[in-house]
Image: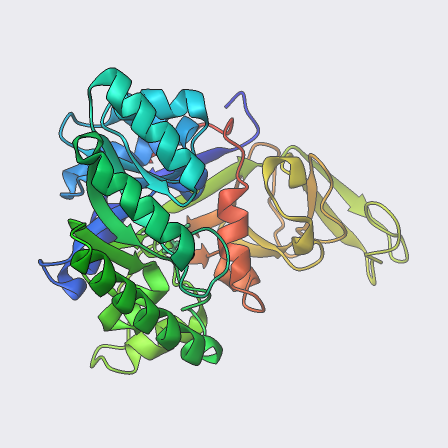
Amino acid sequence: MTGTSVIEVDRSALIHNLNFIQHHLGEDVKVSSVIKANAYGHGIEQVVPVAESAGINHFSVFSADEAQRVYKVKKKQTDVMIMGWVSDEALEWAIKNSVEFYVFEYAKLEKAQEIAEKLNKKAIIHIEVETGMNRTGFIQKDLKKAVNLIKKHRECFVVKGLCTHYAGAESIANHVRIQKQIKKYNQIYKWIVKEGVIPELRHTACSAAAMAYPRTRMDMVRIGILQYGFWPTRETFIQYISKQMDKADPLQRVISWKSQVMSIKKVKTGEFVSYGTAYLANEDKAIAIVPVGYSHGYSRSLSNTGRVLIDGQRAPVIGVVNMNMLIVDVSTIPDVKRGDEVVLIGTQNGLVITLASFADFNNQLNYELLARLPINIPRKVTN
Ligand SMILES: *Cc1c(COP(=O)(O)O)cnc(C)c1O
């Protein structure tokens, strides 16, 4: 290992999760695999072929640069959809290569029309509509303008989808807001069809909505976090499991993240460890230094709270997480040596570190921790 850590992607776990999702939602619902943020840290190049082997033929990314990475590794027939940022230059690339993209700005739609006309190639668009999140999406007035432009230049567009995004389907606290959004979306869908613009796919649901609100599944769902083996929130998991006979979690963690012990030393009672006063040794301690810190994506919020596995035992992260290192209390693990494997996420000797085990207080940390795993950590597909 020349780098300080390695990320492993478990092929059979990813396939298992995708099969579970497809089976749970039913064969009539198309699953778009969301692989923005470098496939939630798992690696776009690693995830795409495995997901394809599980029958996925549609991927969603946030930006055109991610779409270009997918484009290089995907099968010919597989579709890619950009849900967010496409610069004007990238727009030409997208249209030329039949890459699908969201439109939520009239100016972008006009630009797409011009390019499509110039290339004599249809732009494959998903019309995003505002239903209550107040982020991207056409408001009614602009939607009318957009629909008029599309009707005037039918030869320039394939209207592949009509879409929206829910403002927090992972929490029951947002129930009323979500119901309003569903209603609004359905009204807009009826209206646009009456206008004679008929989207091929209605899609609104992320993982949480797809699990908690069956009405949001429609023709296609955009599944991110679930396929990687994590529930959007504990609430979503409990809601699912409460209706099942089998109470075991049906999902399997796909990612493992491993490093090794770089250095070991003893610390005397009364000494502080690492920067400042965050950790005071209340007895004589043995500590191990691991060459992974917040610059490698190990969140500072895990200072004094994270756990790792060394020599088949659990060991607590002590003191603040540094930029390139973290420090672990190995006082109860007598034989630790330099070079011993350190599991940051994953399994060792039957013990498991999931993300949620240190993120119980806040499931958003799952998303954030995964998404911030740097692109330059080597990824390896296992199994
Ligand atoms: C990220 C994202 C998703 C997927 O969300 P998960 O909670 O990971 O399933 C779906 N739709 C949009 C627009 C997104 O940005």
